[in-house]
Amino acid sequence: MSRRILQVGCAAIVLAAAVAAIAPTAAQKHVPLPPEQPASRGGEFLAAEAPAAGIAMRPRIGAGPGAPEIIASPRPAATTAAATARPPLTPLPLKIAPGADPTPGAATPSADDADLPLLGEGERPAGDGALVTVVPRAKPERPGRRRFPSYVAGEGDPPLEVMVGQMLMVGFQGDDVDQPGPQRIARHIEAGRLGGVIFFRQNVKSEAAVKRLTHLFRASAPPGLPVLIAVDQEGGHVQRLNTEVGFPDTPSAKRVAARGEAAAKRIYTRLARDLAEWGFNVNLAPVVDLGNQRDNPIIAKLGRAFSGDPATIASYASLFVEAHRDAGVLTALKHFPGHGSSRGDTHKGFVDVSYSWTETELTPYRDLVAENMVDMVMVAHVHLAKYGPGGLPASLSEPMIEGLLRGNIGFNGVVMSDDLEMGAIRKLGSPIRIAKQAILAGNDILVYAGGAAGRGDLVGELQARLQVAARDPVFAARIKDSYHRVMTMKAKLPGE
Image 1 (cartoon, rainbow, N blue to C red):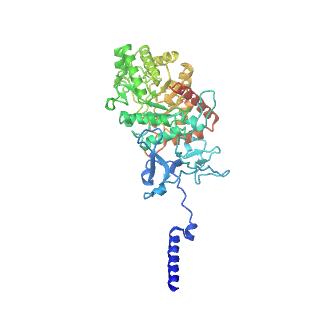
Image 2 (image 1 turned 30 degrees about the horizontal axis):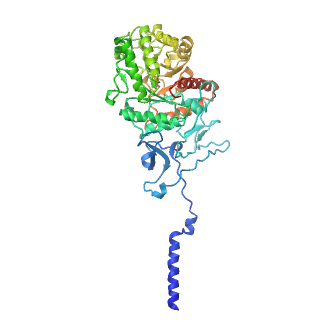
Image 3 (image 1 turned 90 degrees about the vertical axis):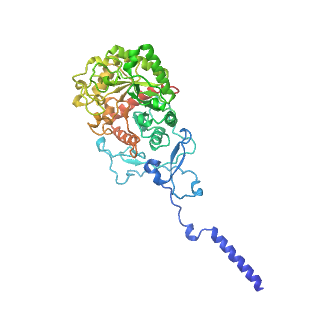
């Protein structure tokens, strides 16, 4: 009998031990699971934060093989397979108490954009002037981009964020799709916050890498909001794509004109087709400045002008534009109202052409506008006293853009600024703080060579400032006008 009792007791002890091994204790039952930690800056990590956070990676949709995407779900460095297999986070609604400031300690921005704080990707101005921090949302596992109607003039207006976004063209840091700069650009495009991107030499590693990048940006664009992918590919000294990466060499404008019109057609037809093949849909050319000032450091000395004769310039520029249109690539005449008579370089600082500029420099613009051979006009940072009150450069002058270019010459298309981070603009203040002035002057697209460098987020800052500035009805109307001009032009792109 005692032996039987001993056997039963042992069995009970073994059973109790097994239950204890698989069941949580009473204390464990009441310990809540740690909440998902929100990713920084609106649900997405910055480049500098990624390594420390131990971020999960997966191929980005539309980015080509091997292109990773930063996922907004941080995990510890020593994680288990079971922990990483959890389902995506459930999107959380944005909850804001009536009248409450959702960003404790943040000052309410004033209507004066000079007082605005710098905001991140995950912040946006609310209608009452408060700054709203958007709760991060999980990225879908399958394609789930925001869908926009094909907004064109007369067919309604999208959210303000989208209209502002179509007015921005920025550069980026990086030369392949797996880097933080291009990834940030792609996210902005995908959200409708950015309508254009520009490549410089630093972004060109190889033909394959450039094509991966242009494909990523195109694939990120929501339906109805095609992205402008631009490059300065004039020929000669100004070629971001060169023979080192397999792009055919293009002669300078001066050399092309010396070969004659038949040669120009062949050269520019090949150039435009190659650009389209590499994924570009904007070439920031041709130069229509006069080249008759031999001491001009930025135009004549570099052979960037076709000629010193306005009629010859217009003729070759027309061939350039026509070849690009045939290939589905938009162009931009530059540098209005004329940089050929300058004795300085606006990349470095203030340039005054008041005593050297002549009305003849407008002739190519008049001729090409009359022939409907203009997609866009880029405005220079040169100062011309007659049209630049208070010492303003042409790019910030309403009399220059709205008065001379639109009113006098009759151009109703897209006007874009030269790079607003050049020396001539930095002398006047922060490029971000003068964005409002550039729009009020008549620019439809603001160009910034930076935009996705290291830690900063120029697009997010511009979005925040311009949306707050749009509380002014006059400024809001200017944004709408520019948006419709940009979208009317984009509707001409192949497949759009």
